[in-house]
Structures are given as structure tokens and as C-alpha cells.
Image 1 (cartoon, one colour):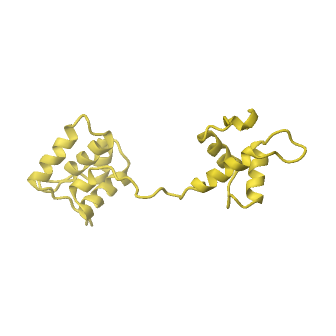
Image 2 (image 1 turned 60 degrees about the vertical axis):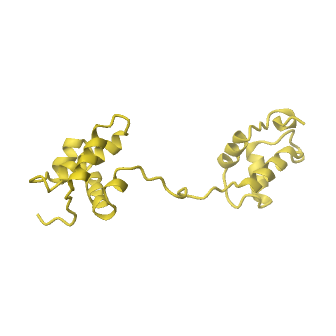
Image 3 (image 1 turned 180 degrees about the vertical axis):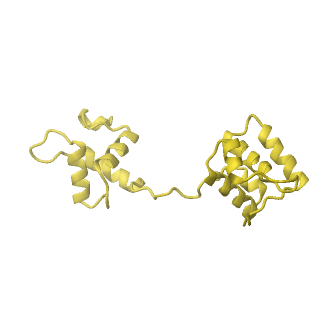
Length: 160
């Protein structure tokens, strides 16, 4: 079978992968990555197929393919460490300025005919005033909870 990515570990890389594999402080994911690379290594003889490696390490075939590809593209050290995304997958809707405006609205007088703000009323008002560009009751509820505000208490839970 003609493989696109081939793993050929140097002696130093093999030693490093072995250290990581036996390091009890390393996470299971990291240890699995190093074991996948050692099993796919062509420099010590006939390597296992990706299907065999997936069964032996108890991971999906796609994981084996990704680890081998990463090794070929970015090297051993980058492959066997966790990658944290530089940015969240989606930017936050509620920023500090919007939080302040939510608090101000929640502390204001409720609409006529209501004794207090509900999350639904507050959300509708924030969308009406275009304080929130988009959002749901859950967005407003989480923001209030994060700020320790309660709509059921007098003065909205804020000590004056």
C-alpha cells in the first residue's frame, strides 16, 4: 500500500516517545499519541497498519491518521503536546460594556404593570434597546448568574 505519510523516528525521537509513553503524569491522550508513533515507526522494521494501531491503542482510525499526519508536518514535540486554540471558537456576545448595560437595565424600574424584571422581560427590553445585538434568555440568565444578580430580590440583589 502506498502511504502518503511515513513515520521514521530517529533514535532521540524514539527515546523521547518512549519516555512520554511511560510518564504517568502525562495524560492518556498524550501517551496514546506517542504509542501510535512508536507502532507506526518504519525505522525499526515492518510497521503496523493504521487499523492494527487503532485496535491496539484503542482509538479511532481517524486519530491514528491525524497523529501520523501531524508528525510528518510539525514534528514529534508538537504532535505529543496539547494544542490549545488561540481564540475561542466563537467570540463572546456579552462584553464588559454590555454587562454594565445589562446591570443598569436590571436595576432600573420594571415596565409598567410588572412588579419586577423577569429574565424574559429583561431580554426583550435589551433586544428592543439594541443593547444585545442578538441573544437569548439563556445569555441574559448566564450573565446575571455570573454577576451574582438575582431578579427576585429587592434592589436586584445589589447592596446599595
